Length: 102
Image (cartoon, rainbow, N blue to C red):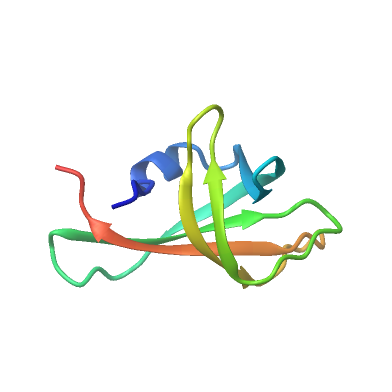
């Protein structure tokens, strides 16, 4: 089972730069725009989405990408395109539904 980011960790790093790996040796710097709480299936779970802005001029399709922060190994996330930013940057978002960390 892959480790997943927690809602709290991402909320604490809103506005920060993360890396989106588009190949094993090439990453794009992306900005975490916001973390939006969703509706979990049980009280043991959390559900949220994280929205990341790509650099201007980059457009990526839905795919599984590795996303990392600072020197962390990162997470494999299914990223889907979202509504672009007002400044023209394209957005990828990940929806996460997992058990809460005890």
